[in-house]
Length: 308
Image (cartoon, rainbow, N blue to C red; front, side):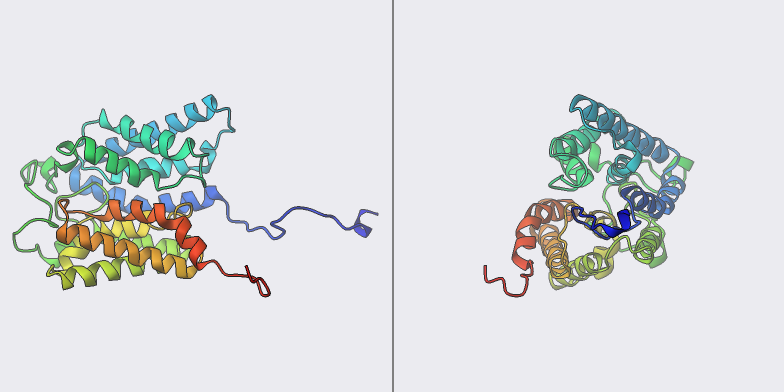
């Protein structure tokens, strides 16, 4: 008898089988090769740093949701992704006591206070990284040379490839991460492979990464910077593939995504060329995250017949 009645429900009426948990799991799978490469390059401490960062993020998500009397969302794996990305934005030598500070800011301040996943105004890992960098600049700029943990190099290098005045290392060295930098930004080949995996799984759109990377490289070249140094010398690949593509903090429409990517590229290039900071990826993504609601309203399509 029920088949004869019209069942009325609220939208959406067609639902996808894709869940937040599946998306986050795919992101973790895409990040796994870069984590393995970081252990190879910088030693087991990178695994320890990442584990503590993840544990702190999970802890603060659990505690904050308890205190705010919200249902637990630990099963969706988003806190694990945030902890992993936060660790990837920090140098291997980062003091461990700094990690809970970053995790608290990422999970409690940026994410949970604004309502939890899907309602945060900015990428939690990026914002926490900026806070830590501005608060503990010396610790967050303490770059470890590859294979120093094996006693094959000095423990700390003087500068990253992005700001070094020395001749660029061979292309293969840059591709496989043979340079100083943050835990998750040096090995270009694994980052690219992770991006290809996310594209193949249709987790991310190619619009933001491609427009972001292309505009940054072209503008930095116009400002007199070697394109290879621009692409492989900092955190451009990590930011463009894994952070600028965050669902909650980026535009929905394709045109909006293009504007977002180009905006990130322009800001990154300007900071790198004329700013006091050598790396502009984090600041660029945060600024464009804040502008995302304006971009969405600007490019929003109107239904046929709607004159408002």
